[in-house]
Length: 300
Length: 246
Image (cartoon, rainbow over all chains, first blue to last red; front, side, top):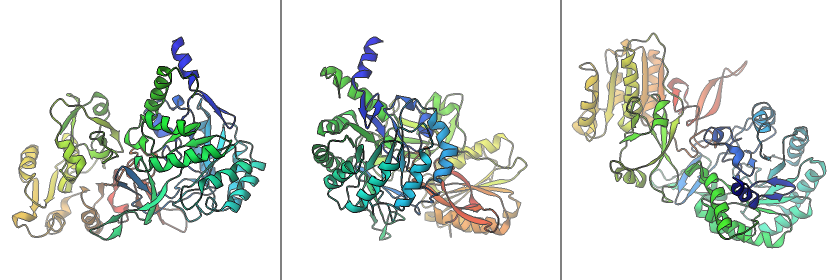
């Protein structure tokens, strides 16, 4: 047993002041608030949980079909469907507050004002480790407006870091931006970490009906198909900022996760792979642990 | 295809489904949902019915007796019906027969006089199903097979049935176009109806909200009818057919 304890401490780390027992967490939106997956395994084994993005008011989401499979990837346009902040506090927070792992709450707003209101209200809750500020959702009209604009990003993150009780992790878009520049701006504006990448904007067409396969025409591409693209962005960003980088994009195995860690990510998020194998995060944690042990690596 | 699993079978009910990942290739990437076609609680086995259409189902067909396969379930809700019904009719299009076959089993155990109507494009699975449903009363398994010269679809067949008024409950599964027509007929004849819906699923357990369909829901106050999105995987796959917006 002692050996096991030693192993666990080997892959623990601190990001943005949050202690994680391992560097593996779900990517926002793929894991709900964890309730569903907790029926399959004890989610307290994860490094942290990242919730689905919460908006100030209930959000209906995009018209179906909302997902379609592409070669080695998934195209989605959920559109941030959620029951809004008040219902989150009423329905999901009680569950989250009982977890033994850090809870990272993802927030999304249509305007700076909405982000501010979200943070002020969430600040009253005690069981939150950090906010992941989603300024990169490709599936809502206002989703990427801030994330693609250096000035708006600077304004928003400076404002939020002044009022936030908890550290800010900013989730970045890979679409139409120099992601390194945006990451640097987040760092200068007070973000304690950045997470990248959100999905790549894409589409798919049914050649029989000649219509887009998604109800919303465009969607975000995730899964193994985007891994090399995401890895390059994580590598470059990690070399240009001092704050920790949380890497994601098509990670489906411990080997994939190690690539991101070697590229400079401090931790990784797993999204689409959860849909292929709901236990994949546990396998990745185990894989990273045994790899570190085999190489006698003391710290990730 | 028949699969053995103590865990999946023990809590399984008609209408529920399993997510199956055939092989570990990147394409198809995600698991695919299959309704229970039959459940044998004693032998701890369940069966699924599939048609070879793409790479995934082709891969499924390559499995041999004794092979292991990754399956997650039982998932979703199950068929529930008013206790007092006597004459349920189950209407299926193609492999949509799968959840209804399982449901027919359930209804028969509760001594209901079940009738099944099945629409097929071609005769391929007819013989298998004809034999499979020999537990039904004579004349209770009716088919409309297009390639055998049957005029119209199973919907037309049902609409032209002089006895359709006698049915006090219906359940359906098949293409959306079929369900949409049936909805009109059930509305007109005021027959309560359930249906099993199909959608592209990602997580399959209710977390990702990727598989929603539009539902006409009873709203409050001034807006008696409101549109909401419901998840096929967790709020369904069984819905009240008359509330769905196609």
